[in-house]
Image (cartoon, rainbow, N blue to C red; front, top):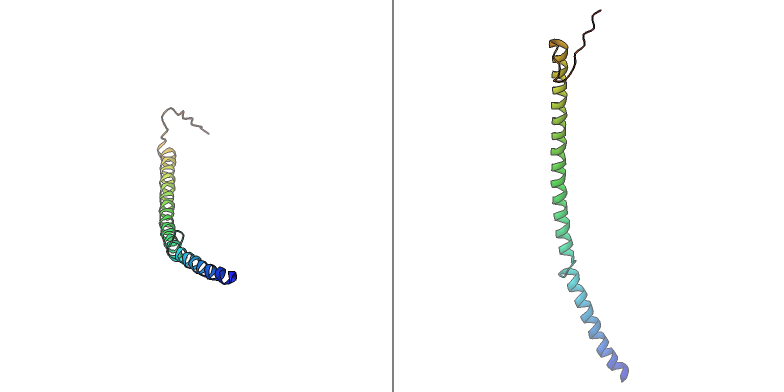
Length: 95
């Protein structure tokens, strides 16, 4: 008799525990649906970061082009027009 009472109590407890764990798995905090939602948000953020990285690379390339262009203009002005910078001393070597 005491064993039958224990089984009558344990089986419903086990069933309730299984139901509780299933509920948490599908609907609770850290559920499969929530994990999928977080994964989707993470994928979207990664795409956004990739776009911004591409934009940054394009801007870096543009800055380098501008810097090289300015250097080329300065070099040409020095060689062809004999221009010098402010506070710079010009030495001409005559052969």
